[in-house]
Each structure stands twice: as C-alpha cells, then as structure tokens.
Image (cartoon, protein in one colour):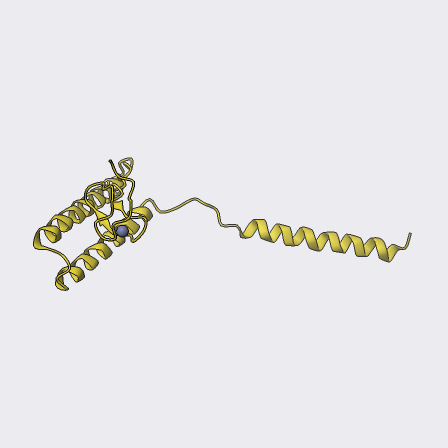
Amino acid sequence: MDLSLILGALLGAGAIGFLLFIRVKDIPKPAPESPFKHLEERKAAIYENLRDLQFEYRLDKLSDADYQATKLELQKDLAQVMAETDRIKAGQPPVPVPVPKKKNECPSCGATFDKPLKFCGECGKPMGGPA
Ligand SMILES: [Zn+2]
C-alpha cells in the first residue's frame, strides 16, 4: 500500500474528527443561568404590556374600567416578580412564578376575552368555548 494514501486517509479522518470536536464544543451548555434571568424577562414583558396598555388607553381603545383592571393585574404580576427577586437575593430557595392564565384568544383573529366564548366577539368565528 502506498504510504501517502494512508497518510492522506489519516489526515482526512483527523480533519473530520477535528470538525466534529469543534461542533460539539460550540453547542452552548444549558446551565448555569442567572437565577434572575427568567424574572428579568418576565419583568420586561410586564413593562412592555403596561406600555402597550397605556398606549391603547390613550388611543381610546380601552374603557376606563378595562384599563384599570388590566393595569392592576399587571401590577400584581410585577409585585410577584419583585418579591421573587427579593427572595432569591435573600438566599431563599426560589418559588416558581406562576404563569398567568392564558387568555381566551380567538384562533381566527387573535382577539382576547375575559371569559371563554363559543363564538368570537370580534369576528364571530367559533372559539371552542363552552356551549
Ligand atoms: Zn375572532
């Protein structure tokens, strides 16, 4: 057998092995993550919702009652996130922040309602709520 062939094969295998090695090394490890990260994300999302809410309210898209109710709910969420952040800072074990209940969202137009509806109040299409 030709020595250069063997050498070539070895080099080729080495190159592939090297590439595979790099690939595996490049895959980001899932941990460790900051214990505050998910809370920071939640906080940012709540602030964004509050901004959106105020924006819609200024455009007269919301009634006073709707605005106040939603704002109160968001502020409650925010207080929960803050409390959880304090718990972690105090070295206490984290308590999972409850995920807010998913709103009754119309699969057709995306409108959301406080109650599950059989038909969407916006577009009138079936929403799969109680009969
Ligand atoms: Zn709809």
